[in-house]
Image 1 (cartoon, rainbow over the protein chains, first blue to last red):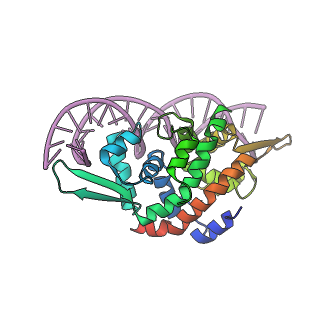
Image 2: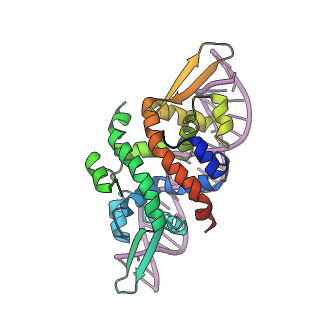
Image 3: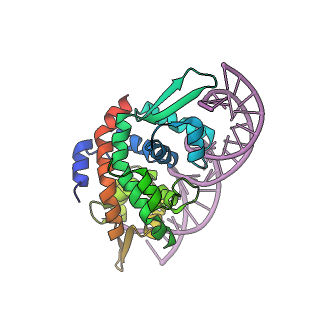
Length: 121
Length: 121
DNA sequence: CAGCATCCGGGATGATACTG
DNA sequence: CAGTATCATCCCGGATGCTG
């Protein structure tokens, strides 16, 4: 194991397991049911609102809006609005967001590769 | 980016974003609010029930039991009961669980290192 | 000590209708 | 097209009490 929990404890000041610590808050955002899927979709490139609705199957408009606003406030997602008619809005990852997805994609890939085995058990 | 979403699509048979697909189910288990923290604690080594309750601050008995049962059913956590009085039970990661945490720890470490910046924004 | 059964309140989530 | 507003619902998760 190249990364140990000890290292994490040092990095986060030993607060990971404490309620309300920043790490828990961010984890809740990016590891939430819809957060992962939206970030995953955006890791392919920028998407329009409607594209996200279709790609992230089952998400409601309300949850898509809420998820995007949270991730945007976290500085992981950037929203670009074009003053056209009809309106066009693009969502993409920031540098920080890409940095995050570099770490998350290997995890998701592993899960995708083992999910069948795990669920069938 | 060493891992692309395209690779993931191939691995999982292009079903990542579909409702009810195994990948989504497993993601919900391991990326859940308490799932991450319990797995994180166990990545340090085996823990007893009471140790987990104390280490994962704020978790209720109900959620701890529920989380552990789910992760055990997924084959990520192993439960060992010793026939003693008073009872002693140890929880630890399986090989599969350790494999998973090898991928998750770098992500958590990154979050721990950036959480302060992100939340303060 | 290590849990399970039960109840129940509230925030998370969905569905629908509407607007710039 | 890209959302917002509103209302209904659901189930997550906490509290409590009990058992082997």
